[in-house]
Length: 115
Image 1 (spheres, rainbow, N blue to C red):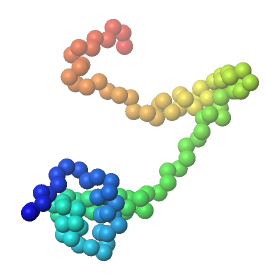
Image 2: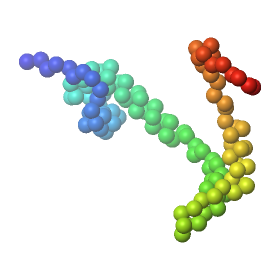
Image 3: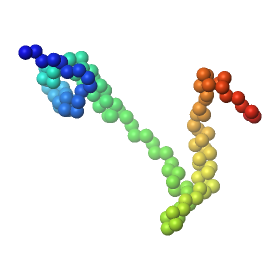
Image 4: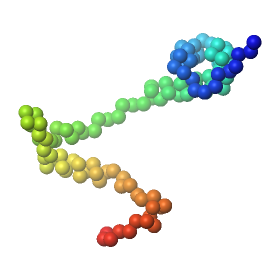
């Protein structure tokens, strides 16, 4: 009796089996063991090795300044107030952000009263 080849996404057990055995076994033997197509196993192996390469090459992002220390806090009463320094930091960060532009399909429906 011929087994049907499984369709659909790989489950966790299959992914684990592939990641543990892809270096020692061929893609064809893994596919036959899991009853999957060689294309599906090969695709996962290529994606998995790509992710591992990314993880090793990515450099940690430099920490941005933490603005939480710019606020005045009273833990006893649960009050937080924005200081002048925090306000200035917020204004600076707002200017760095790209302002969203209106999609062309909506421009004909928007009417500005004053600019």
